[in-house]
Every structure is written in structure tokens, then in C-alpha cells.
Image (cartoon, rainbow, N blue to C red; front, side, top):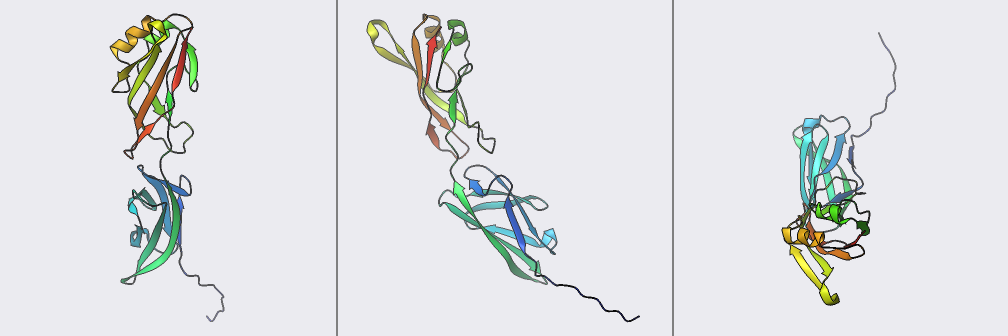
Amino acid sequence: KPFTAEFEVAESNATVSATGMNVFYRGIPNPVEISVGGVAERDVVAQISAGNIRRVSAGTYEVKPGPRGDKATISVYANVEGSRKLMGREEFRVYPLPTPDAIVDGIQGSSGALTVGTLSRLQNVRAEAEDFVFEVDYTVESFEIAFQGSGGIWSTMPSNSDRFTTDQKNLFRQLRTGQRIMIEKIKASGPDGEIRNLNNITITVR
């Protein structure tokens, strides 16, 4: 039977959104959601101007920015009737990973007080970016213990890992109330391969 109807035709467009923030961070996979209205997901192709982008599931991608530049652009294409058509572009800022904080059990911030017993049971120095939007694994590569020896002369003991050495623990057992040690020259690496200098930690024996 004859009928009359009205409808609107809109051109398909692409939506690109970083699920963490509106920025990408180097050295880690940044989650991104991409969709194109009216186009099957299998016909969507995403490219990035600097770095790598890969599909991990329907509509979900991971971006690893390139080593240089402070911006990256994602271009979204659709394969339509045998040809590739640009559906949209989105620009993102690119930041380095933050410098984490050095942490020792029982110490809040960069200074605190511990007993000799607690000191001697310490295992390692950790590096954590506690308020960062992503969970990032940092590794402490080395640090030094600075202490005041006989005659008031300051000396140091190195560790070439995140763990306290036997010599350092033996030093802790000889300390007396009121003495101070400093954990300094702490270096940590992140997934981006950069070595970062972290904050010193001062511990007073109580």
C-alpha cells in the first residue's frame, strides 16, 4: 500500500577515546577505544603517526607511542565497497612516565624512625608511582647507604640491586639510638628503559 515516511541520513564518523586519559605515556600499552558508526568492526583500520597501535579485541586497541615527539595522531579508516575511506583523526599528547618515589617499609615519605631490629630485617628499596593512573613496574637498580662513622666522617656502602647487602645489614645492627643513615643515589628503571634518580630517604634509629 502507498505510504509516506521521513528519515535523516548521517555520514558515518569515527570515535577515538583513550580509556586512561587524553594522553599517551611512553613505554607502556595505553588502552584506546575506537568505533565507527555504521561500519562493521572488521572493516575498521586504525593507524598512528608515531609508535604502534594494535587491536586487542572488538573496538579496543593498545597504543605504544614512539620514542620522540610530544604528540601522536590516530587516523581511523573504513573499508567501504572495496575502497579505504578516512573516517576521522584524533590527536593525543605524549608524556614520559613519571619519576616514582623511593619507598622503604615503615617509612612514610623521605624520612622516618626505625628500631635497629626493624632496620636489620629490611629486605629492599622499592620504587612506586603511587598516584599514577596506570600500574607501572619500576625496578631499583642500585643505591648507597651513607652513615657517619668514627670521628664524624661520613662513609658509604653501595648495593648494585634493590636489596640491602650483608655489609649494610651488619652496619644496621651496630647502630645506636639517635644515629642516622641515608639511603641515597637511588636509581630505578621503568618499562621505557629510562634510568631515573629518586629521592633520598633518611632514617633515624629510635
